[in-house]
Length: 446
Image 1 (cartoon, helix red, strand yellow):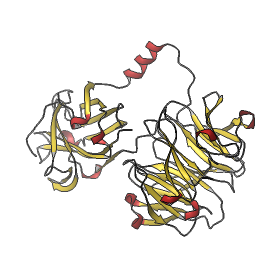
Image 2: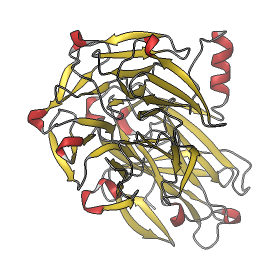
Image 3: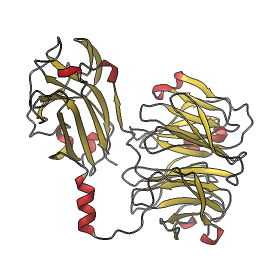
């Protein structure tokens, strides 16, 4: 391994970070914050599902019990509801096609009008034709105008892309780590990929009309088409498309949405009105709510902060164990977005070890002493030395969390970082060191 080039007093995400604060346990932070702030306002329950039932119903589903209740109806003003989206400001947005409105709901179900035709709305509609960034930007499928609108926080709407860019009808929107927007472009029979500046290209053309799209943090894209067939794309690659699940063209207007930790994919369709949980790894399906539970469902949202789609950990099978044959690991939590915290989690290194964290700008697989090094040390990289603490020499006792706040810096938008850690460990079998898995991070400005 290369020699250390930086100390733990430096940032491990280069110039993108402005604060480094080591913490032994992050669990104390929310408890302390709650104690200082007193009683908090009612909030949405993370993980709860909200389902839009055309035209005038929004259901709430508790996934712990699969209990279904009515959250909102026509008395709240909705008329033609389809797209739903939870925002970081803890509001649930709902499109309303027939009166050209988007409503904002608080957790109690109180509705306020957020945008109207005066803001450019012209038939807001589509299975999950709403997407929200961690920084609060909203993208909306404007059906009748054949466009997608962008709402920056506190600013008027702008046209993000439209018919001239290939938008026929944007039934569903999803954001990728690089701020690329993927659009299920129903009547174009294709999926569009749109850059942050609104430039669109055809990602793939399909044999059926795509209605909904979802993305896993590992880069796998799932697209559900009009009659229920679901296609899967590995590594965000159109060339790796397969027909993942076929429903025999018996369904209508399907909807996909991941749960908070991306371990389950929720699926419903307007023709059935049931709810199915799909294992994204095996495609195994479990019906958790029967046919007819929802009246013509056209949208699903899961409230709460999802695990960030810009963070992906991998390479666990290629680690090198340390003392006691304990395998170390690294991971990240939070959001790699300007003004948000990102926490690096170091686990199961030898107690008292000096962990060497590699932060590289590229990923290259290199075999090393029976493991695999993924962070490219032949290009630009830094190494941060971190004392993980713990009882010296005790197997797996070296654990530490580091938290950083990401700077406001336009040069980090869409930037990839490959992280991996090794620790000199004289009592490790054969190698004299331990090696963790790798983490890929894509930083964004919003």
